[in-house]
Image (cartoon, rainbow, N blue to C red; front, side, top):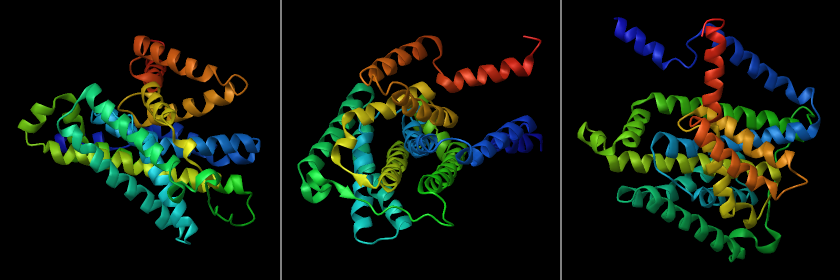
Length: 326
């Protein structure tokens, strides 16, 4: 009986009363934020919500399954342009977002097949080649990308006369919250434990009955689905798509967010999303400094805090929980 109760406690999202309090306060602050900050701050936080979805997917693949991918920009482009074309054909946005995720997920399965035989840098090179190939296809195909004019997206019509940016903020906040809860459920399920077993030792995982083919492909599919949804939401929010939004540097941005936020951490994915969106805003007048800041921060994280921003946050919580005794 004690084992059953402890397992149920382990599956709980928030096991401590204090955790429920600060998480509730944080969510309340996010709900009130658009009414107390300038519109451009609301705009930036909305983009963080959108990016946090794709970065969670990337973390499920890299952090939890141990499969390195530098092709996320390709899945992002596939999802975005799938949504863009369906939007122009008059397909309702929920179906368009779902189709964007499914299209990216289907390509994720195809790209995942090399992971059955390749590991480490070899797999990274294959996925990088996929991302670059997708970018080149969209750049050179006016039918797919709309050419130099790109694709114009019909944006959401706000309800109750709420400003568009505020309405988009709440819209993307709810979707990001749903995907965050989904991510927690995935990693707490048998599927998530299979991902972790593959990451730690795929041979041992196969010995204990984990189907490597099924779960590696499933990890790629889920990760790509998240990224495709991010692409669709990004296009819906901006109202415009063009191929140069999905260069190889976009894959690097998502990868940097996972490393700096914290591997195998859903909270870290959100922190990483905030980092990669806020740094370019801080250095808006010195854009050439952004890659330098990313590179230096990765070095500092790998040397001093391998668990990323989330690791530092956990240590701070532990410090104050044990204060004044250390």
